Image 1: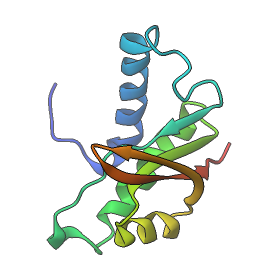
Image 2: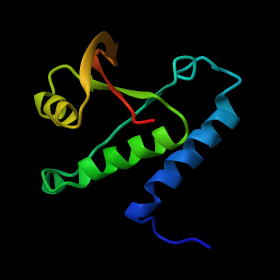
Image 3: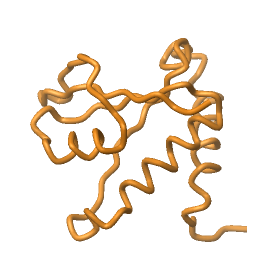
Length: 118
């Protein structure tokens, strides 16, 4: 049965995505995040009209709950170094920069990290 996803489905969706990724790609890159028990959050985008209403917080919190539920001890994410708004958003949610720096398509990015509840 197909139906639109609901907020309560986020944890299950995250667990399915992680399990499917591991089954499909785990043999190609088995140490990607799994060796140190750290998952990675990718691409949280909201329309400007939806920002500041709590939807982003709910999405991130639900993803973190899903990661914790599958045994991850922490989570990292990469954010554009110049994106002060996003950096503040992630700090508000408990993420902190960990000195990781890189370039993504020529754009300087910094890594943020948080611990997950056991």
